Length: 301
Image (cartoon, rainbow, N blue to C red):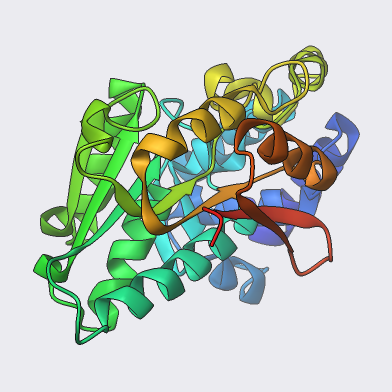
């Protein structure tokens, strides 16, 4: 009977040869999943025997990972902002850098929700929600801060009804289904003009089409994700540009939009906002590595 350390060592070599950037992590996560334990148990008990069924499952997972299939899809889940989200091919796999969008969105919502002079709920929309990562994590965070559901109107939109189904599943599994609304929409809902949003959050596709083509040709992990959730057009800003065009009708006068961008799109988003939203303010916020990550957009004051 094979031991955990033996199986991991073999998998590391196979995954390294296949081009994985994180062969050890991949091997440990997949074995833990196959056995049904936490990764720390696999690491701590290298001499533990692995049953034949678990070994067969593991080797199949390793084979699929060698072909480029993402670990998150193989496990059916991804940790994000302190919660575990169900993920599959219906939506993009949440990335760690998007957690900052949740944190900054939370600050904006709390400022408004705790204003003793306000009347009515804070209106928040997560545009292109995908798996629901941003909206669900925000709802969980608001619950943790004991913000009543009626104080924040939180809507998640997506053009893909399959992605919305996944987002609903994640909301329900984390007990925040009552805090979230879901609507199929191409960016902002059509009624945004009559009921504008105070906080607009969006992690829209921003990868250049040519780069997506390269990833697909290389059978890299993103090749297994929905192309429409990755492909931002020739310059990576096509979908973001369309959302900018909708902000004059959809963003409240004192509202704020925060959009995740690519690490090389800081100057490009400034130029795009200047062309599409003359006179509006844009601040590019860096991530922990100092790279452009979030564009914060407001009307001119």
